[in-house]
Length: 384
Image (tube, rainbow, N blue to C red; front, side):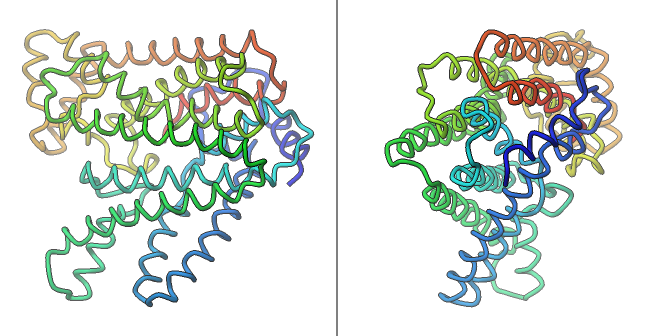
């Protein structure tokens, strides 16, 4: 895929003015990354077809299992992580370098993402993802329909864990296919490993917070956002892309990417917190109000409790009781009335400003700079 074609798509569709909050992020991302997304999808499809065939040779049931894992990877999504990694690479490499050598590495991030999603859905007992049944729910339904022995739900969860594990192994295999000098690939792998460790750390803090929400705080919720989301959604993919181009982690560009990535990544999670309560399920692909049902200590809910009046606090203390839809609607209104939603919106805007400031004082490919400026807004003012 020619880089100038990617550039042409970007320059044709990215407006001079910042992207507004009402413009769906899916349309924005697809418009100026169509070629990249297509290339990532083809890389994943070709790789997974070979892997599914190899596992089918072990046993027909293994083929079906591998096909389920493949379908989880290819089920859609915004492909945000390869996108940030691409622009991180492009910002350092410029427009003259061929994409093919690094394409397997970019696609690797989607396998890592699927690993995280499938395991996260088991931990959160989520029933839908991207408008479809989650992996453990789908596998449980298959188990039940086949009339097999044992508990269908338990079987579904066990298989989903294995699906996530398989995606992690596949990610390692695909990363190894990047056509890079061995020393550079080793440096890329070191950053990739740090990203994985930070993802696990953030996930642990996330589930820990659900067990002790009374002793959680806004600061700790933001720490979860930093490690669970900012690190492996924006910051580390950008640095991953830079390392693909041979940028040292101590370079000014790496420092700018870190500053930008943490700011946009935290804003991305703060937007997720809002969508988790107020999002349209037909757009987000997930039920609205799940965080209120479980009492998940997000920054939004922690801030609402800090700002709440005694009466409002009493209502909010009732979250986590698996309440019905009417009660969830009422609790969402209480959160809004505390002023927490407005405060979160301001926090998002502040982080976007911080991210844009990080790009101003660093030498970077101008097309990449334009893309990252637009992405800072697109990724944080979205409806899904």
